[in-house]
Length: 311
Image 1 (cartoon, rainbow, N blue to C red):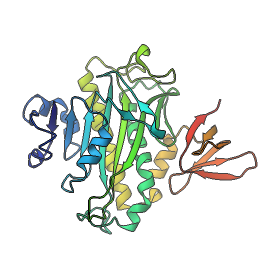
Image 2: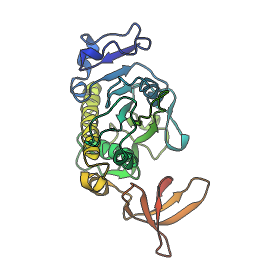
Image 3: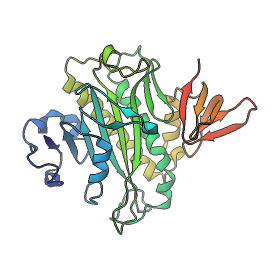
Image 4: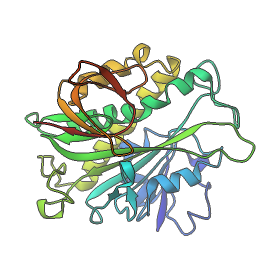
């Protein structure tokens, strides 16, 4: 069963095919995530979904679907991570959330004209969207964990707890509809909630419950983390657009650097194509790329790759 959990009653009738037979707002689902519902114009719930990113990308073809609409499930059966890795979790133990971001077409950094191309300044900021999501999730999970837990943002957007991965983030461009020049991105995140040690997919993973979060009320835990994530992500993206896509002017670059556990670490970078880069992560450039200084003190900017923190 699918359900709409939406703060705006005008949006309840969208995507009727996918929502056939769904419970409408006003029933149990309307009260299920009250804090999260207040943060976005539309919150879509699926009892089960192959991939929340895939489904939201499909829904985003409708230009009437508002920016910052979100789709969530606790049973994602065909999730994907970075580098096309499978993302698998037992039903009910993890939260998959995807959020639609529409690049503004106006110079004010806010207005979106249906079918119009993104403002050039907004395009400059697209590379920072995954990092904005990482910063938002960092703060969201920090709020539900004991202070003794060391939260880290591993470039570009993995969240680690005491060095173990609890969340991964994947962004995808939305193919423009026929005749449209609009730019939109779907940002997906997979967050391990209540997995036991035996349920973890790899030894280097963890869950909020294993790290000490209070999971006695799982619904409450989901609402707290999700509401905070949606609030912080919306705020960072909105400020990025208002700043003309400039991560320095918006404060996003400083926030990411402050939270990033990769900076200052010796790393091995598995680059696309199989090449490797060894060095020390020394910064993040204006485009969001990781800066790595090699043994010859040459600094290379890495836009994509698998980062391994070396001890």
